[in-house]
Image (tube, rainbow, N blue to C red; front, side, top):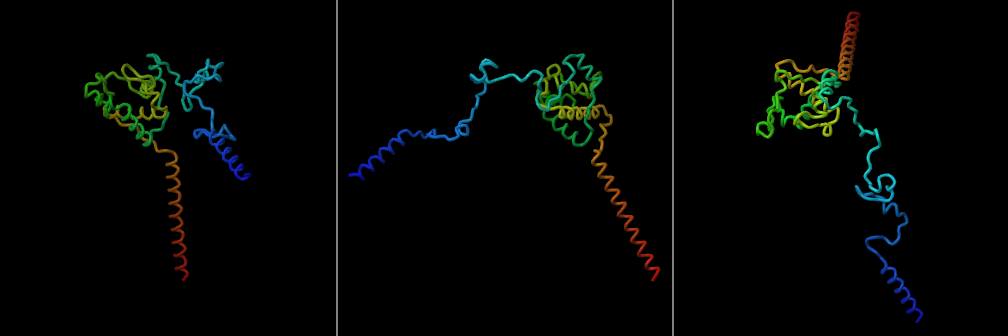
Length: 232
């Protein structure tokens, strides 16, 4: 009888424990923060933000803050600002093959559709008459230089929009470099002169020194061998 009672109690306890079990949520969480992290839905309303934004999760950046890696641009989006950029801005990047190749790649992505692969204003959209009136970089009277090209990429001009959000500062200068080469090709003038990177120059000098020392060492050994032969 006692054994039957024990079995009945055990069965009742098991039923009690299983009946309260939720397969979607553990009954016991010893470290609940690891199971249920605090997360906020985008643009959700939460009491914790009540005194900051009136409850909205979305908050404006602090005044004066800028995105990581972004550099302020001091020339305004005006005709005067564009003229000033043409007069003052020059490309800070060295004319290396790497920068030229990157500029050509980025130009093909963002510019060639309208301006054409050669910069003659005959991009695929122009040929299909989706956009009209794109001038050539070599058209008479056009003043195209580093500063003006960079400025137009920052703000856009006429029907061309800004590309400041799609490209970073270095990429815009690389595109500018390629535009200058396209302009030179259309006008029949020499392209930008490629500058050998300093590390390549240093490596070349080191190689020359090593070759010279090696050559002198070989001559020294030949002289010693000749002296030994004469002594014999």
